Amino acid sequence: MSLKSPSVAPDRATAPATARPRPSLSSLGRIPHGGLIAVLILMIVFTALRADSFTTSQNLLNILRQISVTAVIAGGLTLLMTAGGMDFSMGSNAAVTTAVAAQLLSHGQSTTVTVIATLLLATLIGLVNGLVVTFTRVAPFVATLATAMLLDGVALLVLNGMSISIGDKMSALGNAKLLGVPWLLIVAVVVLVAAGLAMRFTTFGRDAFAMGGNEHVARLSGINVPARKLALYALAGGLSGLAGLMLLSRLGASAPNTGGLQLQLTAVAAVVIGGTLLAGGHGTIPGTVLGVILLGVVANALNLLQVNSYYQPVVTGAVLLVAAVVNEFNRRSGPGH
Image (cartoon, rainbow, N blue to C red; front, side, top):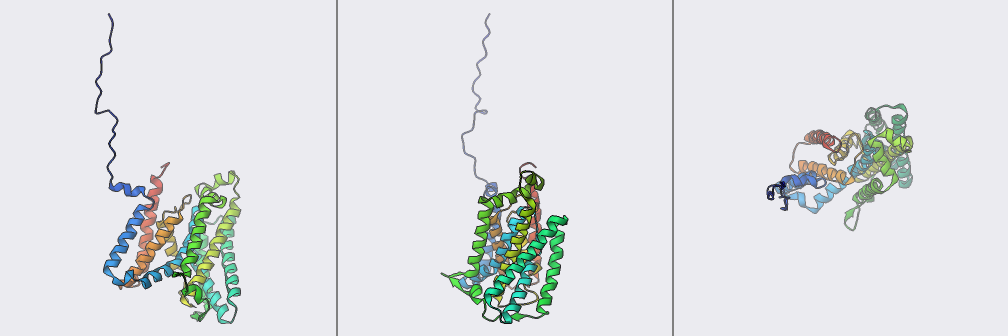
């Protein structure tokens, strides 16, 4: 007696599906920075509909000039935060730079000497931050916040609490254009492109990602972590000085409220909104650029819609808080969590 296996008819329910999945709203999340781009577009459309002057060339150029200073600080901060560091004194470093440069220029010093001296000073300040963080094991947040308070006081002392004008010196950087593009924007683009290329294609950038991911493992893999940290903090300081000079050239004067904590918080907010992890290990220059533009548009919209200026720091702080929360959720829901 032979046993035959029963014939089984093909089950259409278990047959592999060949139909393409329908697109859904969740597909927006697969686009790099898709949510941020959507919010930016909505903000632009909303402001353009409420304020006719928003889309004028003069206003758009004004936005680009304003965000250029923030973009330079945010570019250096992206590199530093990717490596697991933090510098809350970059805005205050820029304030000291503008104060010292204004004093030198107002006392007849040449522009060349002033630029070189202030950039070296800003880089030295960043290097000191790096030495403290690297060799004393003080948390970067605590060390650089203390430095920020110290530098804010130094800036006030240098200015003696007064505003110092530099006349038309450095006005070319702050107001001139090249083929219709402001020089401030060109400088910012060069800094951001250089930072993006360094993060993507150089050993320096790869080491930053490795240090942010796991500093102990990075050290075991042969990376000179202390040297890299010092270089990153010195670079952050140098870029702070550059941002300070850009700010001075645009305003034509240095005042007690120039730069400082507000500029720093805006840069931090832009970097975090752009997707750079506060814990380190992941950073993105394109995301930082989008974050800088979004905050610049928000600030401009508040001005055009005649919203009380006191609400601007409120908005910046709220955006930073929301971005930090979303950033943490994204980190926990990422690979390995």
